[in-house]
Length: 432
Image (cartoon, rainbow, N blue to C red):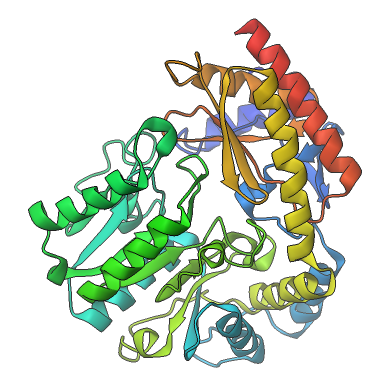
């Protein structure tokens, strides 16, 4: 990565000397401060942030309501451990999230620290409830970097490397990906074939799906597909777990992406934007399922940290008071129109896809062959950064440019960011 700023370069040299290379960076930019939809690096350069900490900053950087809530909690106490002495913020946030989760039945909420923890605990809960060992995930999926998270993740490069052996009793069914030839019908038949050939459905505790595959390239699962797998899992006594870690908290224009389909999962995992950047994750779902583990089977020293819970309550207040879901839907319309124009303009934009304001471009060498173009995606990110715009890649081939605009971004910021993306794409395609 070429570095042009002296303070960035000095810090990068420290990073290379003292931080393992496995902790990769999308951009060699060291952040000094952030506000709303903007960040500033240590050399004073300003950027529009269309990455948002990988979809974490849906309410923007440093929202006053969040800062106020965290400061107030900071003055009271920072940690006691909920399993030792509980506190109000945890149970208040648990109540609000249980009421927000889809489903006309009693629900309970567990808090943890990271997205991978949420996924692992959802699997633990499913196994405890069903008494079954096996778990099914999808290809192109991402569920974390822990042993079970890696095992569930349906992408080998980067994430799995030589880290095996992996957790047993984990199976993968094909994810629908129509642009690359995997229709809903083919994917569903692949799931049925998995049950016929690899694992008896009577041994499967849960099917884990992202309603929009995040790291897989912003591939939305259709209403048809989600409804069908809900019927299949219900008929086989298999729990359906919706991994909403990236797609939740308004990222798709609804609080939970799965709501677009009307499908009600048994469990939902969440993290990222729940606490505006403070480490908080969790599982919410059917009360009788959540209660399956015996006392002591769930928890964690920092799980549901009081500062993070205070931030989470403030985030929900912001959604209500600022009409953030409505703003998200309006943002989605702007993004789809703008990215659609890019597709019309550049044949290398093979597909624009996503759900609401969770939208991406898949770049290809040729629109006929659809050969992935990861170099063009990387060049677009680098040129965008030079123009003051931070973006991220995704996808099995690293050829998808994803857009994660904070939902509080102003109209002017959104249009300016899109103009920078358009200019960056034009340069990258011309040079590529």
